Image (cartoon, rainbow, N blue to C red; front, side):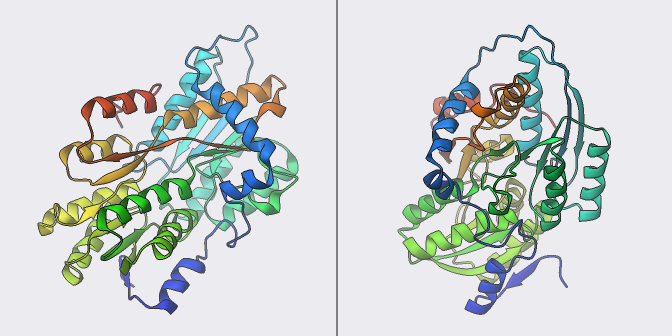
Length: 374
């Protein structure tokens, strides 16, 4: 089987691709969408708004009591996207602002690492006997591992990059879900492409591996366009979060469908691989491509005019929220914590006013710094 695999457009194949994703954290409908969650639990929305005000504060008074805490972090941060590295930096700097010097253990792995490697990293983190574990949730096997910890009550778990609580965990949820709601950002991009194309024409989609991101960013995008436009999807590729596979997929797409209006990329690495492929084929200014997240690599592509649009996360709020959550919990103020914190997005287009872009960068990277090095 080829590492980059095109899917012919047919109702049966597309349905199988989008609705039978074998590595979903739970079957469709088994977790709350963010809007559904707030509709069912309005008190959670109020707590989230209050917590957001805390996160936005830049001036923090150091705690008089030097609290001791052990924290373990497992991140799929070995990728071009700087989201995870910035989250780590802002998290550590916020704790330092509180006067906390945690015993911090962290592992960065590739997002495409085999589950055996992911599980090994998870076990190493647990072996440090942390008070708090920061992890992400994608594959079904992660869900099973996390459930065993929820039953034990230690360590307290923060699930990052997921804002859709699992229904099966009602009554025994993690400490918090923290991130930027994938469906919200995806809808913003879908709306942009509908406006840019007049809702007509052909497009293609490059997905990560089957899992939570494919569901929330891929299926959500396609469903939105189906409901609100006459745009026709002509091809789907699963490239994983892999820049080179995305480049090869783009070469194949342009060869077969040179008349497509845009390529929807689900992640930063996929977007940058797409740009390389379009550059090679001389189609960079003829076929639109988006980013997802608005980190430094994407903003550089926006400035060069190579990327059409991205949905920019106010990135550092993510790590700050994790730090603030841990502090409140340690101070016995857990009741103030919402179950979900979802940060803000801004749509950033090619040709954006430099002054506005600088303002957004200063806000988004207020702890991790505008010039972020790998």
